[in-house]
Length: 81
Image (cartoon, rainbow, N blue to C red; front, side):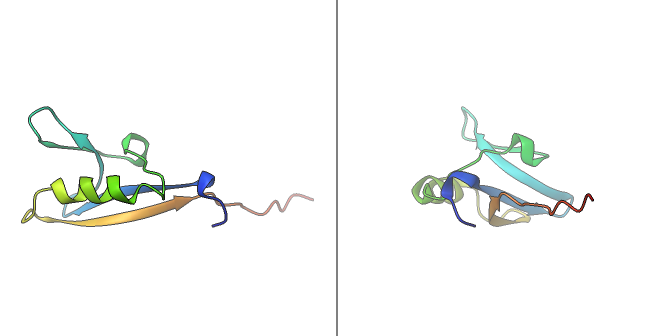
């Protein structure tokens, strides 16, 4: 991927019932997640400190695995005549 302007990073929680995406921590500190990528908090690839701060606060010992996923622009070739 060429430009940071066209990239984003999300924190994904891999669970037995399906994948969820990190949104934020609530007022009482509870973890809030989204069902789809559309509701996820998008971090810039340069925001490593914010990503690490968020992943450190996610409670350990839960039945899920964390994955930090980088997203980017994809170009599909135009095959029209």
